[in-house]
Amino acid sequence: MDLARKYEFGKMLVIGSESPDKVKGLWLFRGKEIPPSVLDECYDMELYERLKVDTSDEAQKERVNAMIGDQEPFEGEALLDAKCFK
Image (cartoon, rainbow, N blue to C red; front, side):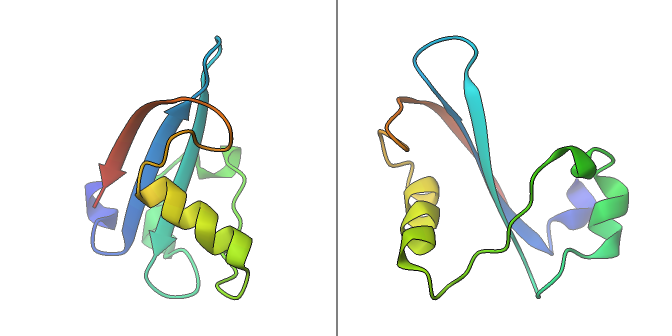
């Protein structure tokens, strides 16, 4: 994913208190669409549910801020680990 660094910022969280843990992620891309080179580089992209953030929706903005800020608990569950991709 090194080729994608100039196009994106990512945050991945591992949450939960019981096995299996849950993984939640936030990826912000430059522009309105995911660049084709990123889609080519990330071969498993089709396995993930992708949603565009609606910046006029306060609930979505709060969720994004909680992910970036490592807010605990996250969505009512313990935050076990967080990694940033930039």
